[in-house]
Length: 310
Length: 255
Image 1 (cartoon, rainbow over the protein chains, first blue to last red):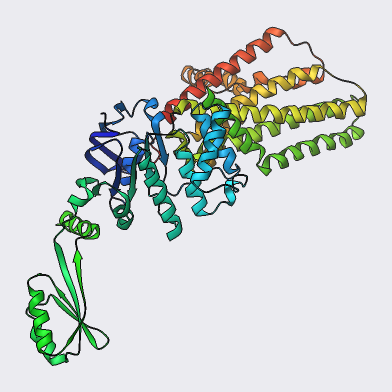
Image 2 (cartoon, chains in turn green, yellow; image 1 turned 90 degrees about the vertical axis):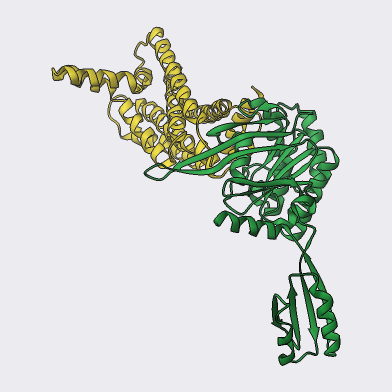
């Protein structure tokens, strides 16, 4: 089956300033997103996420390389007929009501009045904007704008939905709502490609992820394989040990922090844990908690950034 | 085609829901009313001043609206990023621009019609007559504002509203003086200067072609050939300017 998105050596450089200095925003991106997956495009701010999405949606032109949506080159306007796009921090015509705006978007796809009416009805339900559709968009809250943005991205029943930072600026309830909508799209068999710099968002919903830093794709794969299942560190909290005695475990601990009548000890090696437990019992101390810390996306992020710097 | 229509209707809605438009039309109405007072103070050809000032107001405010709406048309969409979800749909950039242009034409047509009706009513009440001669002048005024809005769109497809406004207004002023420009070159006796002024004469819009106000007010004979030529010239100029706008706009990156 043709992949939903395929890019080959996609590169974009911008010229700016008086001397037209070149700045590479995206370099040599080759990526394949299979149909039916939820793909998280991760990276810190300014890494090239939005540049990639704008290239895919035809808002900017690639300096070199090519990209395809369901096998059709992005140069071809019709490649966008199966595409839905929600830009970052969306802003829509203030003077239109939500309903007028969605009708307008439907018309751009050449949808007839009856088809639009039906689709808008279901979309308003999906994004929970029923009852607010007659209000001008200028009076919508941030969360409502994001939701009407999602609705306009889905008006043509797209097979591929591209979302730029869909959860940024939303409160926890808003984030959950957007997450639920993405999961529902996945259930319907659609491909969702979204960018985010908030790793927990991605961890919760995506099947596959790519990490982009400084315009280069660093790693890509199933989220499970990107993460190392090995335990990275263990945090042990002990109580009832005096300050002098705690010095004895310094050689095996990575760090020791004093808390309220207790100590937080971080171990980097798993084998040291039984030793620490035995020692605490010998010194008649008390173990309050043992928390193993597995690798998170946050760690990969930081590792990648450190690597890029060095 | 549906996309062009949708964008045109949306542009019209935006203009109609903007309060500036109403204040401009209100000003035009006031100017026409003032002409009634001036008419009382005029010696000689009475009633002419009402028609003269009426056509003048319709022309002036048409131009102002064409510039004010035209320069913001494309810029605002980019500045407020409302263009992003639009162009991510299967909408050609050329269709977007053409839709915007038809939207402003629709706005100008309605606005010209509204002011014309007001002028005819005013004359009817004051003078008790209907003067069909004015229709020719009103028609060519509409062609002129159509050319000006195409120019406004052209400048705003690559420049800021302030600069676009300045450029468009400058072209409006120069556009009424191109005959003098050509004459100046011809009289100078300098071959190079003559070449330059002739070049500019053909490059710049000759807006005097659309000025039939005097003929309409004083019922001077106007050949139908002259009107046809003016309309053809206007359409040709608009098509060229729009084509250039599309070329500029097509290559643009929306960062």
